[in-house]
Length: 119
Image (cartoon, rainbow, N blue to C red; front, side, top):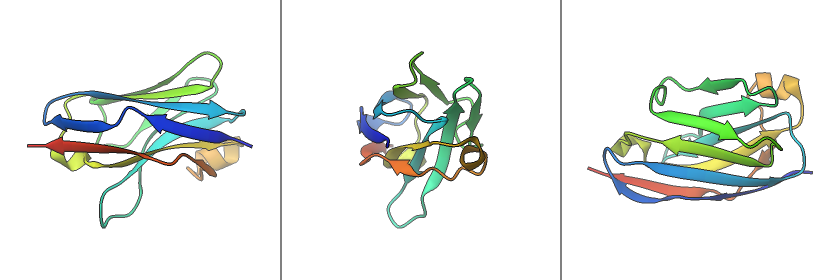
């Protein structure tokens, strides 16, 4: 079983940066970040698997960078050039199996950390 805990959210002005962290207990094949704005559906942002392969949503390519430590127990999301539309609750997620990762069907979730970007 995997337990996840996010941190690093906050309020910044447009153009600023934040670095989100996720501490994980238990092994997984992949870990990723999702976000959900008020009144909107949950949106996949980025993920990384055990080999270090990464994927990004088009909306964050070139601005966000996902990474993990060598033990795969900590996940990070470096968020640069933030825009007001990045405002959302950000969730750390993990999946145990490669097939689920390929489908972006993450089955373990953190509690979320709030990111607010003002113009």
